Image (cartoon, rainbow, N blue to C red; front, top):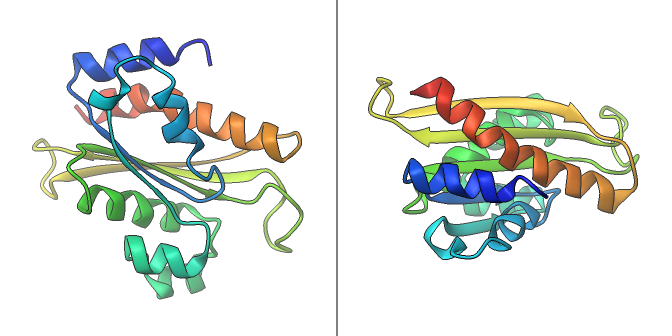
Length: 163
């Protein structure tokens, strides 16, 4: 990812420390950032919660949210990001959940849901959360790579919106 250095520079400039909560990307968001020299100052931790049980156990995603909205949904992504933020020293969390194959009759292959959560004193709740859904094309590896890059590329966009 050619603009990862610019994202890392943005994070340094704004003193952002990241936690990730990853399902479909299986740690690739964190690994992409870790390719940048000095990433230790930018990355706190990464939760890889592939299964429904792990999302519930490690990130406290509500069973009701999963049943009501599906695992591949923005509400689940939002709860994943909030769970990662609550369980880390990070001031921003990115989450991803989705499907790359035809494994869900309700969700087309390549559908990915994301959330970005920022600790913020400028909102009454203390946390600003944004979410988005995208559909990527390609094989498993390509969809996961595109998802990780999208998640990081959008971090400055949403950070700017909440400030």
